[in-house]
Length: 201
Image (cartoon, rainbow, N blue to C red):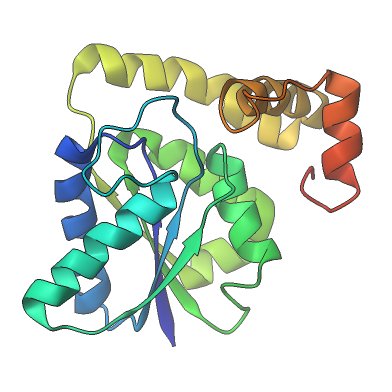
C-alpha cells in the first residue's frame, strides 16, 4: 500500500492551491489510496476561503474540492498539531497514520526539502527513509529572499534534530511563536509537557 503526505506551508490560499493540486496529482499517479495532510495552526492570520484553522484542514478541504470536481476518490487523513517540520513527521508516526510496511510519498516545499529529508531520517531512520520514502519537492516559494531566509533557518534546525539540546531550544521557540502563542510556556514547562508523551524526542 502507498500513502502520500503533503506538508503544510501556512494558510495563504494563493500559492497553496497549486501546491496541493501538485500533491494530489503526484499521489494519484503513484496509486496512493490515502493522502495525509499535516500542519497545525501556525499563523495568526488566515486568508483562505475555507476558513480553516490549521494547515492540514485547509489542504484537506482543497483536496475535497478537487475530488468533487474530478470524481476521483481518495481517503484523507489530517494531522493538525504539527508546528514545525520535525513534528510533521513525528506526529504522523505517533498517531500511526503510516506503518512499517507502507511506501510513502512526501510532497513538500522545495526550499524545505533538506529539513524534510533529515526530519524523516531522525524519526523513521535512514534505512526506512531510503527504502520506503520518495520525495517530491514543489517550488512553492519562488522569491529569492524568502528562500534564503528559509535556508538560513534550515541549518540550525537540521543540526538540532541530531544535537538535541540545541533542537529542543529551537522547538520551544517555534512552539511559542506558532501553535503555543496563546499560552506561552517556559523552556522547563515545554520540556516537561512534551517529554511525557514522546513528543519531544
